[in-house]
Length: 96
Image (cartoon, rainbow, N blue to C red):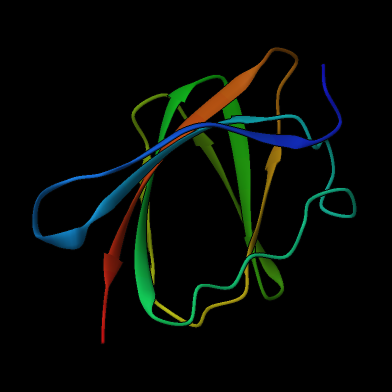
C-alpha cells in the first residue's frame, strides 16, 4: 500500500462543483496531510475499502457507500483504516 494520498482524477461538473477521485495510502492520522478548504463544502463518499475521517478529536470509520459532509474551513484528515486499497470520491461545492 502506498504511503501517500494520490489524486487520480479531478473534474469540474455542473454549476462549478468539482469531483475528485483519490486512492488513500496514508495508514495513520499522523501520516495523513491536514486538509482545509476555505471556500468549499465537501461531500465525501467511500467507493472502495475503509477510510477514517478525523475532525478535531473525533474519528469516524467509513466503509463502501458511507458519506460525510465536511463544512468549508473545517480542518480534517483522511486515512486508510483497512487492509486493502481505499478509494474515495469527493464533491467540492463553492460556498462563496
